[in-house]
Length: 113
Ligand code: AMP
Ligand code: ZN
Image (cartoon, rainbow, N blue to C red; front, side):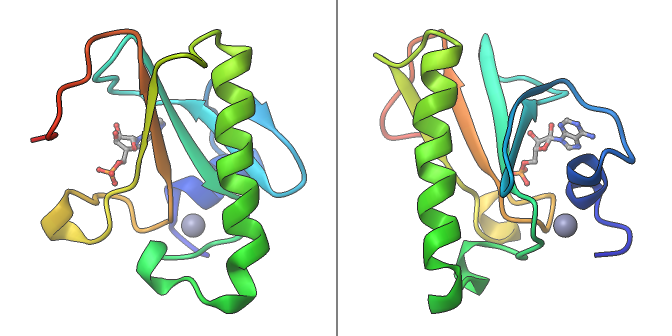
């Protein structure tokens, strides 16, 4: 999608510190980390937000979660990490391309703020 920063990172047009990628998924370090490990995991294919995904996206959604588990292992945080998505501006979504935050490396409070 035009003018989407995460589409541009997924296509390689914009640089990011990529920690994992495969045919469907790209993951890179957040440029404004809120934890010692803060990775953004995106589908290569543009979907606005989780609530905009449909049945046709079921396999892709599964791949994103499986990728998160692999990335946690790669970064050696598999025993304690959080995977979260902000759906909509009211929930804190600032980039309208579905993404998961993988957070680790510090105490993660519950409930989150
Ligand atoms: P959200 O607020 O849930 O939409 O999360 C968007 C995240 O993407 C924020 O944590 C930003 O710091 C991060 N972000 C935005 N642009 C970039 C970029 N070009 N490279 C890396 N991270 C980015
Ligand atoms: Zn996009």
